[in-house]
Amino acid sequence: MKKKLFSFDTIAAISTPPGVGAIAIVRLSGDKAINIADCVFKGSKLTKVLSHTIHYGHIIDPKTKITVDEVMISVMRAPKTFTCEDVVEINCHGGIIVVNQILKLLLNNGARIAEPGEFTKRAFLNGRIDLSQAEGVMDLIYAKTNQAMDMAFEQLKGTLSKLIRKIRQEILKILAQIEVSIDYPEYDEGKGLPTQILLEKIKQIKKQLDDLLKTATQGKILKEGLKTAIVGRANVGKSSLLNTLLHEERAIVTEIAGTTRDVIEETINICKIPLKLIDTAGIRETKDIIEQIGISRSHKALQEADFILLVLNASEALTKEDLELIKITQNSKRIILLNKIDLTPKINFSKIAHLLEKDTIIKLSVLKNQGLDVLEEKISKLFFDGEIAINKDLTYLSNARHIALIGQAKNALSEAIASIKTQMPIDLVEIDITRCLKYLGEILGESVQDELITQLFSQFCLGK
Image 1 (spheres, rainbow, N blue to C red):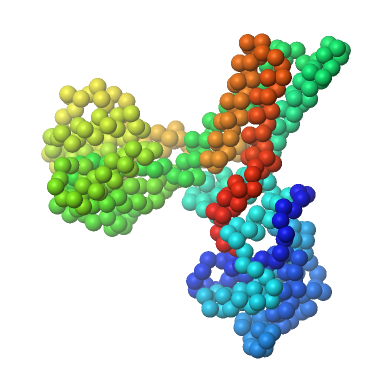
Image 2 (image 1 turned 45 degrees about the vertical axis):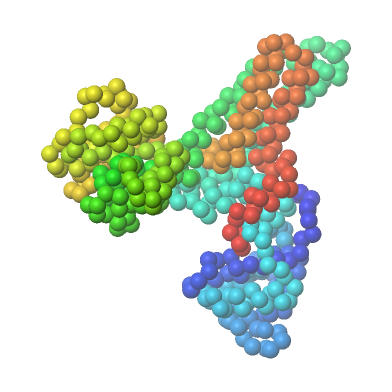
């Protein structure tokens, strides 16, 4: 178990979302958790009950003797709890007033309000979970799809941690053999680590990191969603497309050009892929100051998007704005949508065929609900080759911090390989391999600064 890094006083927080509900949970954790709960509970003597038992009774203000609520209290003694401390959970009636009254009583009797993510932070500091598992908790809470939930649960179970630890163990063996070569050069040569064998071992570890990084694109998409910009000139049907995909009237649609003045963002699932749809203002020349701001934001959204749906009006000839958008998005991952195919087609691509050689072009009519199924199928194939299911045999990377650290670890090994090939001294090779070990340790939280830990857990919900 890890050494405690700060004084573990007793904390309390509401662990269920605020508002009206059938049940709410107020959680306590710390050495005095059971004693504090016992002060405000009328029922079984909580300090004497068995661990992992639940008890019926009432929460009472010890000063006024007024009954606050009828509750069920769970008592869990250390170390077999989420935080490895004594934990009490009060199951009360949901409601803003009653829940806050219970929390206030706990605070008045010796607890303090928990910081965001502090329960999970204590689980990490007490060695119950490592840092990547703690981040898996947050990913599980914010998962938007079944696939994202499965991926987060695998991380919470420690799938990534086990793989990282296995790789680190292989690196430690290499470093130990290098140390023998450095400290005892006269030692039996048969037990040394020949350069070619060292090179092969490093290449094998680097390949494992490469394979892990290959899962990052799909992992990030499943976790965060594709930032998808719907772009096009004014009045080609962008807002209508957004409304149709959302199955609700989210954006105002009129025949007047420039109706959409600002960027509208919504998240939907298409073929189990979360898409963060961004409906942009129609790009055109205008003297309207407010519309100009919207168009400026459209250009920014276009630059930041992972994926672009470029909407053109099939019933009109290509305009200057159309040609500009086709050119500035040609290096982006995109699908070109020819909308309004229910009208007489007038669009002609013959003069710009060279700009469209690698593009997927889909004909559709948002008004008539034609072609949208084809669009969904193409999006799936474009990013997942039509297969969205999580491969249980793979460990996926989806966390930006993990991806960056794996990349740095891989680069350190690449430098070690280059040093070996140029016959650099073995102690210089050792420095690169040690850097790789450090980066992998940061994923698990074994070599990170307190500031990073505080920053990571501050992103959690209050009460988790």
